[in-house]
Length: 313
Image (cartoon, rainbow, N blue to C red; front, side):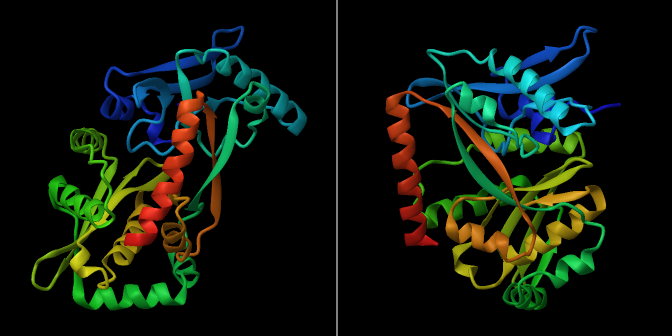
């Protein structure tokens, strides 16, 4: 059966977990009633303003477009037509719009022509996990040294409760002085939904004294496994736990998915960590249409986040 999603983040069960009763789908159908375009969207609020945006812990969101044209010119014209019909369904005032779309949507000019601002954001992705030896050879030598050291002092378990992850994430937030709290209820809903659909892996690194050093959470379907979230105990920042968990996550991903996505970051220090594993980068576009107040708030938030991370990472 043909998938009508680009990723796990567009599955109905995922959206029910991260945005219960707050999402809907824009759809486009051809003259035969066949679905050719689908775009799930989440209705929320920011600073009191109504906005369509990505739900929490949801990297990208649509649109999915069926395009079977063999010629590239026909391919683009078909995509343009379907995308324009999806864009027409986006409500204007009072709704703002701030959505990071799936990397399969490289043709974003129709958004530009409709007055949206387009900004690239980056992730790193191994498109093919069939040769783990080759992947390991391409990891930065310093990163491999960290992983080898971690293997001698840490053990990795995959049968831990989700609250271990939440505790590590809270420690990371506290170290980085992030005022915004964790969405613990959402994390629990994600975990329950993913367990039901066999779509998650929680890895936890323990020291020889049985204390937790770090935790990492991965979600997947048969196409892509994503590093979704993680955290670490600041007392063990030099143990290499996060590097080890990422490598173990990549190895696990090779058993369930075709590709592995680090989920990306525009923050320089985080990007450097992901880049050290040697995977190619991919571009996800963020599409925005904001009022003046939210535009100024967005600009300030990006600058402030960079400043905070430089002080605490």
